[in-house]
Length: 341
Image (cartoon, rainbow, N blue to C red):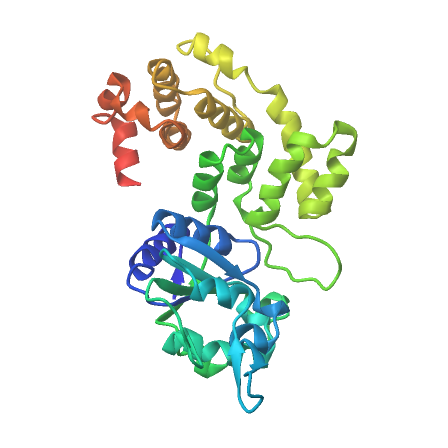
């Protein structure tokens, strides 16, 4: 069953407090770990992250230690198992990259996930499991997950993503406006469907997020090389070309200074760039001017861009919804598009 990020967030919000274990599958780099971490935080749970791919079965069972009489032994917990057993507040135990773990390690997790105990050691009632894995088709070293382990999860869902989901995250995390604008212009580049055995990166939500980090630190002379190393040469070349257009767009500050007369670009790429940049500048104090320009965009047959501008502005500055301009707009065509979308 495919879920988008918002749906997965809602599912985890319901399952985590109910102590129902969830297994999340999906392509590499689409945000599984980030969403699970956010869901744990919003549920006010501590997050304990384990990586079964680098574990030994004893990590889940404990180390045998002889009793004083030398006739018996018991398993003593250590590492993540010890931390889970000693958890004093609600905790999500996140098993990341579970499908890459050796079979023996997967088998050692079965009793923990279902019976919530291992041998004589019983997990506290306030510890719950969430796991994530790539799929077998992802060239990520996943062979399979044991059927008895899969059946111990209350539900197994696959995370999928879209440009709308990625944009919502990018706006909320203040990604560079030229990056957001570019992927809106070329949404097919968000996630590569190609797989390679070469040591190179391809396009994914994670690697585009790395581009956002590189933009802040890499000198201009190395940008193309660094971007190509993040998302591949073809996508990097398109992004570098787009950035040239981005620099040539009308000044966003100038547009807000004279929104009734500022030019409306004819190039589609520049239109994406400009509305993304304007949304980044929008706030409750200047939103009346933003709406003047948004209305002109709609009247020029660019209603999609007007809606993007208003949605992004509200995503970044929720207080905008209380402004007279936004309230008035709800009765017009832009408001109708926003409510309908």
